[in-house]
Length: 251
Image (cartoon, rainbow, N blue to C red; front, top):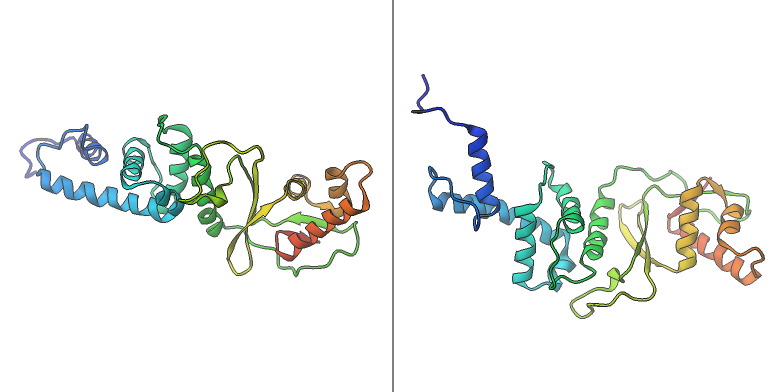
């Protein structure tokens, strides 16, 4: 025989419990639980999530004051329907919240979403499951050699120079030129960020879109019909640097 005096709807009780933990300012405390105990649960859950956000978005945390950060973390905790059971996926959920759910706030920096994405990339690439090709860097000797982009390279374009943002550099206006970056993980599992020129960005995009492709074909796509020798040599030099840095592989 059950020790409970009446039947309990556990799903309803869980919903009541979680609603208060998410947003105690607007949701009532469950009547059959002491407020002090609910506050302990609340602090445990929220502090875990807030700490994880702080460690994964250190620059964003640094440029916001305590009140701004707490409001941001609390709004995410209260409103985002996070369904993943994995802590490693919370940063991606936070990106989705900023992109799709964050209400307009005049105190938010215009680059906040891009900065958060930039900071998320490092963690995401560090745990990516793809493997690097087991080849050594080679020198370009023939433009008919075939090239491919490393599976552990992400090519990124941002409106704001997110790689330069800090407490002393907080741009409020969109620059005329976007910022181009390549993020890669090497054989030592180190994640590296490289700032790209527009030509280098276009070159890597071309390799990614058409891979595997020959060096000659890649150069034909990105260069004018009659490129000068200097421009062609610059593109080949940039490509060799990408090969040396394990961003591009020859086969």
